Length: 436
Image (tube, rainbow, N blue to C red):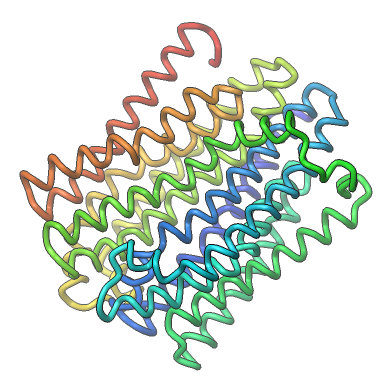
């Protein structure tokens, strides 16, 4: 590889933009739904968002798992297994796509009810979820194949594809939601059509290049490769899924402590949180090919330099976000056409988000670093302890004491505790001279 410094910017910047644009589909939907339907549509989408995000998590887990195995094999100069990992990843994406299609076709209504969508919210929630699940194959291949394209050394090309898909999504959102008044159904259609376009282009890129063209015999699932891809992909899967579980916990806390205004305020806040998480995930995903390659080639110095550079860059981005969000804090509710009561609440609690940003950034960079350096156990601990342990406990304690205001404090406290756990893991690895 070239120097670490050159590789860092080559991978991180395009990865940040690609991941951010991929996640921006939901953010753009939120803006158009807010403008077209107000609090009702935005709340409906926020209720079913955890299930929609499960599709993204599966795509990320499989795509990133395969990509990490590819990069590690490349570092070991094992071209045969690198190719097999790529091709098996494509097969796994197809298999999961079929399962998601069947789930969306037959169980969307049941899932919507289980998520708590009732009354006026139920139909717009069902409209959005059914489309996103039934055509989830486009999301699977769009997200999953982008990782393969990036790890094939075509990070700028992957970014360009996502830019085009996002532009198409914005155009279709405006057309379906604002012009044709199709509400959440129109937003969902705009999203899947944008993802379909990017998936098709990624297929053309992979099949059009002899170096990346899948070999038919390698598409057949091989147990050893599948196990490596799935085992490695557990942490990336959790990284994408964890926010959805957290959202479900907070949604229930909002209903339990107050009512629809708090739920709508969190829906607005969550759009910002997801965008911030996605941005920092882009940094983590960007260093993944470098860290995996350096780990495979036993280049400890490269691992050290890349990680330290990522932390410095993450801190700079976090500082920038804090300044920008504080400056526009009174404009944020207007972006989603929030009602006056909801807008007032968002303006009041936005300070909690500003406090969370550095912790979110560190946690989102550390986990990809750990699984890319083959520390799957530590990465899994950080990934799953937040949604399954830390957040529920923080919500329970804070809401019992402070009612609805406890929700916002619990969110900050959970990120702080996760940060402290991450520092402890990092120090333990440092003392053993395993990482940095």
